[in-house]
Each structure stands twice: as structure tokens, then as C-alpha cells.
Length: 182
Image (cartoon, rainbow, N blue to C red; front, top):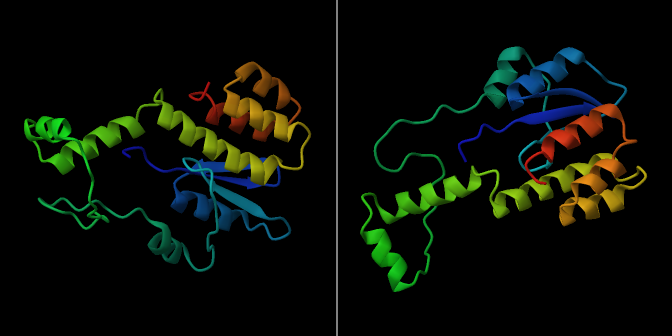
């Protein structure tokens, strides 16, 4: 995916920051909150993550700085995994007619799908991410289950009505994260 991964931190029901993991970590360290739990979510997957805010700013930068892309011809050391795929002959014939390798073409097709906010697979991944966030942050609030059903059914009006009484920051985050889903 070409989209930069972002993270959001919440102190209770209050949104603190949405930014890169490094900037979120630095902001939380500067906040120095010890009496309440701060929850951090990957905005693209909805998964909750843990961070280590100990040490100096340099320590945190070394721990959470984005790795720079390696500009080399061939296989970059970015976690390329070799696996077998099975295609019909017509698919191989089409791939053979392309100007790039089969792997490069398949990666481009997958990236195009992942970066297309209107694709069905993108919408399903976004729904799953919102569902993970809702489960962690809203599971004890009224209408949680009904809102989750409306999310998966694609019923925007019902979803927005069900979350209307939720705390301001959580509701705002949900509206933002569901804008391409409905």
C-alpha cells in the first residue's frame, strides 16, 4: 500500500493525536499521563498497539522512526516473500504480454485495489478496522451491537443515528473512518 500508516491515541474517550507512530509516541511521552490508560490504534487496521515511551527522544526516534526505502534495482530488502500462485492459461498469456514481470504486474494490480477507496475489498477491510476500534472503545456503550450491524450492512443513516449519543471525539473518529465505507 502506498498510503502512509497513521496511528490514533485516545486517553479515555478523548482523542489525543493522529500521526505517525513516532510522533504519537513523542506526544504521549510529553503528555506524561500516568493515572489513565492511553490506547493507540493503527488507523488502517483498527488494531490496538502497545508502545514504549521510555528513554530519551533519540531512543524513541531510533525505536519508531520510519525506515527509509532502499532505492536498489532488483529485490529490495523490504520483506519480499516468494510464494506460488496458480492461474489459468489465459491469465498467464495476458501477463506474458505485459511490459513488466508477472510479479511486478500482480503487485501493481494489488496496490491499485488496496488504494482504491471504492473497491469492495477496501470497504471490507475498512469495516473490519472500524469494528476492531469499536470493540475496544465502544463495547460498553449503548447501541454498540446495533451500530456494528448497521456498519456491516452498509446502512449509513442507521449507523450515524446509533452513534449520535457517543462521546464527541469517538463519534468524530467513527464518522471520519467510515466516510469511504457507505
